[in-house]
Image (cartoon, rainbow, N blue to C red; front, side):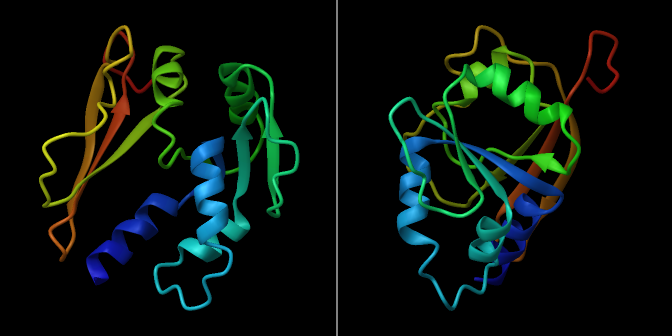
Length: 161
């Protein structure tokens, strides 16, 4: 599905750090490294990106470029944002999002709309005390009918946060 491949490239472009929860990390670590014929580029990206696993119990991440974080999530993400590099992206790991949202460290949301209806799922802003003010930065359809909606957070006067 070429459109899905194009969409995955957009997720990864301009990023070099991946904060991730332990469960999602272990799922990805179990699946992606052995993939040898990945046309999506996900495997290559995950091999290159710095992975930061938030876990009080994981000792050895057993995947190159992976670091286990034990401090509070917001403190760690603020330190990552202060370092030189490209962007930071969270893929999956919905359990991290409420704290990141309420902590004000999310600058951009890359939301993909798939033409599939499940009728249930986790809400992005469900546990946040208030949804941030957002400005639509891009709406990009792909041949597969997947649509990327990029929203940037805005400050009190409407400027980018």
